[in-house]
Length: 259
Image (cartoon, rainbow, N blue to C red):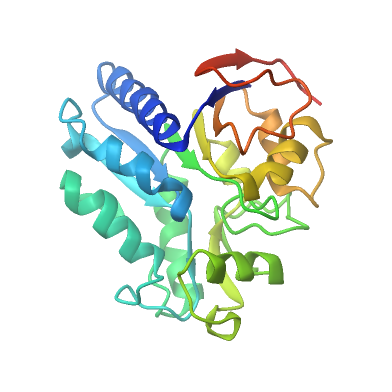
């Protein structure tokens, strides 16, 4: 596990995008094409803006999946994650090979199709975040660490749904769907490389438990400790509760936790 801490979220986003771009270029140097998985949400906006500005990447050789989508929301809904991916990643880069989850369709049909597609691929790099409740994708606590299907229907807990309101995606809690399609924990961990981008003070408790606590379903992102090629990008606020983290000075700290 590599932990990188920065003085402010903009610097963090820039450095995360720099690593992501470097990883993409390195893999494209030895592979005909690569498979990416991208997260959504407020925490990823600056990161994706920086990444999509990198003109050194041959995006025509990138195949894209995304992590999750609300059940019941079509792509034109302002909170749709498919819309988010389309507007913030697909359109700026002109990626032509992508798989969007359609929340307005029957979820079983959507899941069957995307499970077939991703099961024949190896994900090279996954961009993820960590929720205020420690969720990974939309795997809210207690997360299912054993589910084998690449994508599944999940229930969204109250903390997760309130986060969506507080971030401005919905006006009221009642508007937030109670179910979503999410990439499973096991599928996320199959990625060859994972880059986690986690800014903001409100994520500090989840960050602490995910990095320094035990690996438990009640903290879904704690499972990331088991990944052999993980880099977590934090700002000084999201890292503020870590016991072993010095004051941020725009540097990286490598840890070898395997607990």
